[in-house]
Image (cartoon, rainbow, N blue to C red; front, side, top):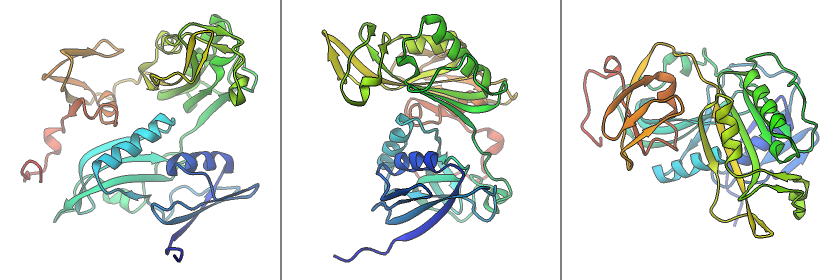
Length: 346
């Protein structure tokens, strides 16, 4: 069979390694080619040749508005969003959006250079543009701001102070940091530093191997041999909550252990939490749909099943994510409702 026609796209990137990691996660495949000054991905779905070219300067905005994929149905959309979030990529979901003369459900993500990627399903044509994407965004006059992150890996020294100013970054990534032989005070100190350098609303992501009981010097095979200490499975989440982070949740924690040593099961944990945001003054009504009688969040708000609760807009944004969209309805503002309403399901 002949090779299918493929769309080719070449992107300038500021950091080739970061971009390779990002697109490896986005596509769920390994690059077809990687060199010191070049990389290429060739996914079959969609049939694409994406090349990455290191550049000294990356222009912000320009003619490019956004890139993305149209998926066949909502099930595929949810599966892809959950896969990306489990891998540590941030996404923002929008349900039933009227945009670009069509009704769509979608999520958005930014690559390391700030390019906006859209993944969506098509639900039908409309006779009007819709308010889901403004004319200014379509024309490219409001490019997405570039996200700034700081990362620590297990094979690197743990700094007493992260070399950044207060409130400078969007995200701190701690990959294996808590698998080093750190005292409780040292663990609290690095989490406190992460909170210090985060912008309001910024995210801490923790990737760690945890145990049913703490394990020192676990002597694990392969790449896991670098693990020198395994904390108790609830300890990382407690550290984030005690540091004042909110929206703390376990993105990955499987029932089956990765390793068993001396009868102690050890599991991979991916965890996130967010620095609180000062309220912008806008409020949005949300409703918890169940199955529990009520929920309470880290900031003390209670969500009784089937009752509308008014929350800050920043909190409502969390409930639009794939993890919560099945449990919460986020109501649109009455002032933003179109004058003519369509029937349910249309």
